[in-house]
Amino acid sequence: MTLGAPRPRLRVWQVLLLAFAARVAVGFANDGVLHPDEVMQYLEQAHRLVFGAGMVPWEYEYGLRPWVLPLVLAVPLRLLELVGLDTPAVYQPVLEAVLSAASLAVPYAAYRLARALFGDDAGGLALLFTAFWYELVSYGHRATIDAIVAYVACAALALVFAQPTGTVRLTCGALAGLAFVLRFQMAPALAAIALVAAVRWRSRVWIAALGCVAVVVAGGALDYYTWGMWFSAIVNGVALNGIANLAALFGVQPFWWYGLALVVLSGGLAVAGSLGLALGWRASWPLLVVGGAIVAGFSAIGHKETRFVFMLTPIWLIGLAALTANRGGLLAAAVPGMRRAAPAVAGVLVAGFAVISVLGLVDRLPGERRYLRPNIARSPAREAYRALAVRGDVIAVLDASGASGWYRPPFYDLHRNVPLYWPLSKGYRAVVAEPARYASHVIAPRRAPAPAGFRELERVGRLVIWRRVVDPPFTDEAPGYERRIHALQPVATPPAVRPRW
Image (tube, rainbow, N blue to C red; front, side, top):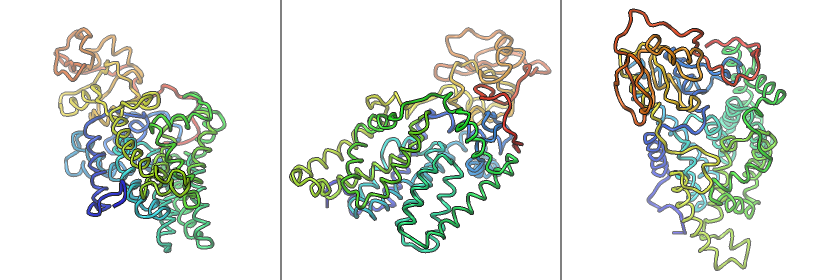
């Protein structure tokens, strides 16, 4: 058995099952949020669609988001509602399990790609690396659109190297089209995948193109149905981000930013993975082309976030697998002077993978916090919302916890169709001034004084849930209150769309 390869009795499906368990375990262990979009833009909107309660961010008034992902997430929510299991204690773990299962597309695709390009030993290592790398595990249970698009795009790329049947080509094209619909900013990477497909399939690539066009047109039709404009997410996204430079409001980074971020977040292993791809360029050129397109496309944009280049992670991990496979055979063949040291180098890299992945998952990797929020964290504010979700006497809630409103999905946790006053909503200051007039429950830090007319109901971490002592016959609604997030709306007049929901 070669260095680092999975044991013969450990089958692919068993590794995938362990990878699923790791992702679900991380999801169950924490309710922290890495990026606001994963909750507010998708989980909250799916909840709003099914249950009628949910905040509306400005992107859903400007027609900047396709409804594809919220609609998919709404399916299990609706099924659970039909059987009476529509509580956060049930539907949140279910959605996390569904998302974790979807994330397994990456390790399986990496296994198939590495095996096709570099052989069985590299395929086994690529499977293990992508199954248990901390970023892939941490994102597994999250509805982060960049990660989900990477799942789809990786599957499409892997199909390019599968048995070239008509069904395979059609499915590959359909997946590429879906990735474009979900996030059109991935167009350079998808164009690179199309180039690889054209080189391999030549004249038969038209079947994949047919599948791609069909899905893209369907995505445009969905935009028309939900926004009243064909390809609304693309048209308005280009207008606001490309022409009006809206993205710059959220920060601008230098062109080399992604290179440094990858080195830091990989503990330097991305350099080794890139070396593996470079040394084996005759086989790995498809990965180099796709990876280069991702880096070039997103580096050209001033605003940068690590999640934008999520798909680079499985690519360099495949390169790491190629470098360490067969006891460092690739390194030994490319650099004859390293022939004796190659097995030791491969062993160090495999051990380094295990150590760095563990450190990254528990947020102990040097420099990691410069680019990522904690991978595993608890949010007392979210726990307080879920505590209120099981109570039948909730009339209105004031969230004075001081926690950032961007990093939690309010009604996805609260699951009560009642007014919710928090810093991102209109009327918040009026409710803070007179909480007993507008709210039946108040969430506040322990150190804060008790609101007048309230009694302590429950303690959740550093927070206290207060209950109004006496409910009046009618509870006023705060002036101007809306379930819309007006903060950071970039222009006074939204694009000419007609939101259906």
